[in-house]
Amino acid sequence: MRTLFHLPDQPSSRCDHGVLDLGGHVDTARFHAGIGSLDLLRALRVSRHKCRPLALNVQLPAQWTGDPYLPRLLHEIDLVACHLGAGRRVEQFQLSGGTPALADLRRLMNRLHQRFNFLEHDCGDYSIEVDLRHTNWSTMGALRDLGFNHVSIGVPDLGGETAPKLANHQNPAPIHSLIDAARTFGFRSVNVDLGFGHAWQTTESFAQKLASLLELEPDRLLVFDYARPPQRYRSGAADPQRAFCNEQDKAAMRRLCFEQLADAGYHYLGLGQFVRPDDDLAIAQERGRLRRHCEGFTRHGYCDNIGLGLGAISQIEDLYAQNIDQPKRYQQLLDMDQLPTCRGWRCEAGSQISHMVVERLACDLELDIAALEARYGLVFRQYFCDAWPMLEQLQRNGLIELSERFISILPAGRPQLDAICNLFQQPVGAAQPDSHSEWINHDPFI
Image 1 (tube, rainbow, N blue to C red):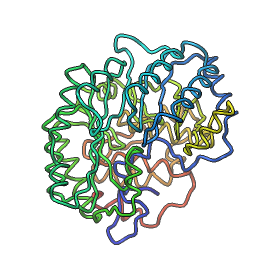
Image 2 (cartoon, one colour; image 1 turned 30 degrees about the vertical axis):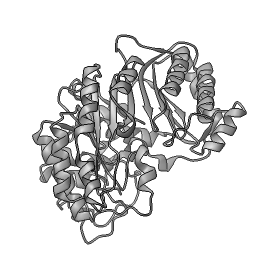
Image 3 (cartoon, one colour; image 1 turned 90 degrees about the vertical axis):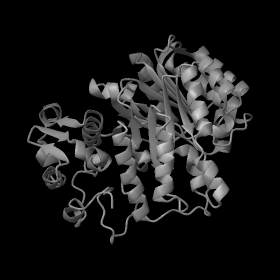
Image 4 (spheres, rainbow, N blue to C red; image 1 turned 180 degrees about the vertical axis):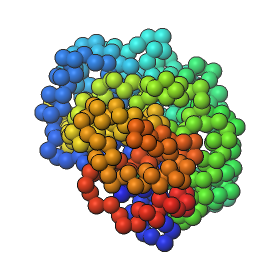
C-alpha cells in the first residue's frame, strides 16, 4: 500500500511516502494496451450525443520546436473535433508542457477557437504553464489577450552545486515581476511551483525560499518532491547526475511546508495543492462543488476531459485513454489520419466505488457513508473491512471523526489527506502489510 505512515527503519518503495503525490490524479499503472483509438472514438461519439461541456488539456513537448510537432497537433485537434461536433462549449482549458513561441501559440489558439466554443467574459477557467526563464511582462500581456486567465509559474531548478547558483535560485525578484504582471493584466489566479528534496537543499534554504514566496502572496502553490515531480520537470529529474537529500531532511521540509502555509492561511486540498481561502477552488470546496479528475482539482467535474498532444489523457465517463508519448510515432499515426491513442483503462464497478470515496473525502473532507451504501447497495464497513481498523486508529489519533454514517477529516488530519485517501485505493480483498498497526501509530512526517 502507498502510505504516508512509514517507519524509518523500513524500506520504502516511494520517495515521498504518499505525500504531495502529483501522480495521484489517475492511476496510470492500470493502463494497458487493450484500449486504443477505436475505444476513444466511441467515447467521443457518446460525448457528442450527450453534448456535455468540455475540459480540454493540451500537452506540449518539454523541448518545443514548433515544426514538425505543431502541424500534427493541429491535425489531431481537427480529427477529435470532427467526432465531438462543432461548437462544443469549453469550460476548462489547460496548456501544459513546453514554452512555445508566441507565433506558434497564436496558431494553436486560433485553431482551437475555430473548432470549439471558448466562453467569453472570463466565464471559463483557461490556464497555462509558463517558464520563468522564457516569460516577461510582454509575454504575460499577450497570454492574457489570448484568453488565458490562470497562470502557473514554473521556477527552474538551477542546481545549487555552487553558491552563486543557489543565490540565484533563491532570488524572488523575477517571479515577483511575473506575479505583478499577472495581477496587472487581470489573471484570476497565480500558481507557483515549489520543489524540495534535492541534495543541495537544506531545511534552512527551503524555509528561506518558502518565506520569500509567501511574501509574494500567490493564490496557489503546488508543492512537489523532486523525486516525483510534475511532468514538465521530469526530464531534469531523470538526470543521473541529480542527487536527493535523505528522508529525514525531506520529512523536515514537508513538516515545515505544512506549518508555514497553514500559518499563512493556505488550505491544503491534497495532491500537493495549497490555495488561499478566497481562491476559486477553496470556494468550490466550501460550496460542495469541488471535483477531482485526471488533471487534478477542478470546479468543472461534470465536463468530458479531452487530452490532446504527447502523452495527454482523456477521461470520458468510465474510459481513460492516453496518447502515445513518442514524438516520431505520434507524428506517424497522425500522418495516417489515426488518433494517437496507445493505452488506457476502463474504470469498473469496484474501482468506481473507491474513486467515489476518494473524491468525496478529498473534495468535501467528509464522506456520507449512508448515501454511498444506498447508491451502491453495500455495507461500507464490510466492503472496506481491511481499511476499517486503520480508520479507527486514525480516529483515536485525532485525525478523523468516524461513525457508522460519516467520515470527517479533522484539521489535524488535513496534512495526511493523501495517505488517508490511499487507504481506499488498495484493491478490495488485497493483502495488507503486516506492519499497518505500527505505521498508523507513527509520526507520519518521519
